[in-house]
Length: 122
Image (cartoon, rainbow, N blue to C red):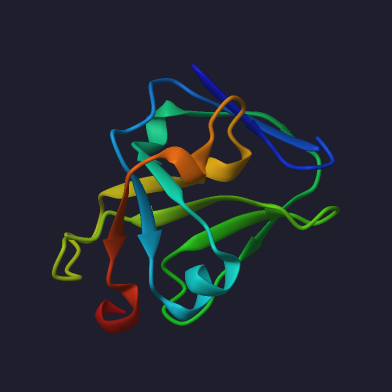
């Protein structure tokens, strides 16, 4: 079980499972600006424990819901289509990309990182 929380603690979530073997960096303009490293999981593994200040930002195609804390500004997770490596999507399968930098006990900078070419795919 992994636990994540924003800086002010108003948003807390749990993930049923272990970290993936590598984190993911997306090169799209939005993710690059935030500097996030994502740990991806199936949506059923997410349990929102507290969401006092959960806000959502959507842009471009509006298919991805970027959750963040409206009080302290920390990025929490993104609810995204499960895009294939070529940018295609089956139209229904989703995945959750957690901000690995706010997961308790995880040093995201020490983990292997793979890259999604979001700059050119979407």
